[in-house]
Image 1 (cartoon, helix red, strand yellow):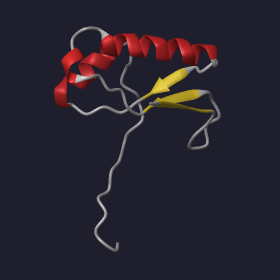
Image 2 (cartoon, one colour; image 1 turned 180 degrees about the horizontal axis):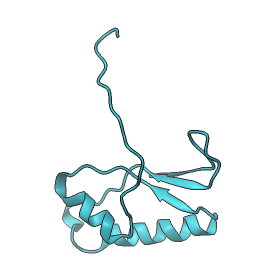
Image 3 (cartoon, helix red, strand yellow; image 1 turned 30 degrees about the vertical axis):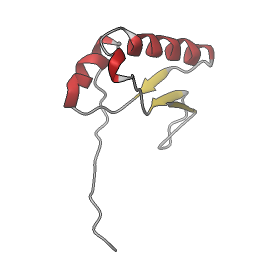
Length: 87
């Protein structure tokens, strides 16, 4: 799942956000994720999207897979705050 935005956090530029990519466990290591990303990139290029952003966790080798797909580390920092009940 991906979405195209034409601005966030005060920026006005065509960017897409890749939220989720999933491959059936029985189809792993067969190039399915790469094919899905390639088609996504082609579709986004046709929409004149200039950049794709995503967030990955270190689990399951995800960062290495995204680096192979052409992603690079960004200069933006992600911050998280856990919320207590009622606060």
